[in-house]
Image 1 (cartoon, rainbow, N blue to C red):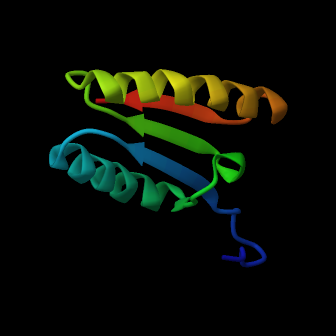
Image 2: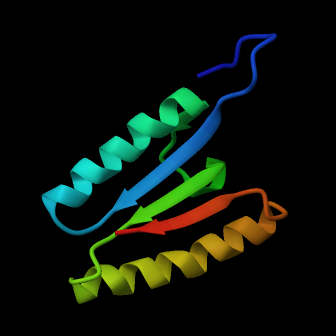
Length: 90
């Protein structure tokens, strides 16, 4: 997706989801809410302006994956000079 001259650049959003079907629904709703604010989806954390990790705190495996992902995202955020929002939901 290219940005049109004279319009603000699109921000990139990555949402990673673990857990039940309700988490999948919640992630879709988050994307829907953020779209009018200029966030377009991306698949790469390196390209994202915002990363949301939507997890299930009841499932231990999901919790482990989130903590692992947070470590990797910290490195990415530092490499980008702190220019990334990282949020955890669920």
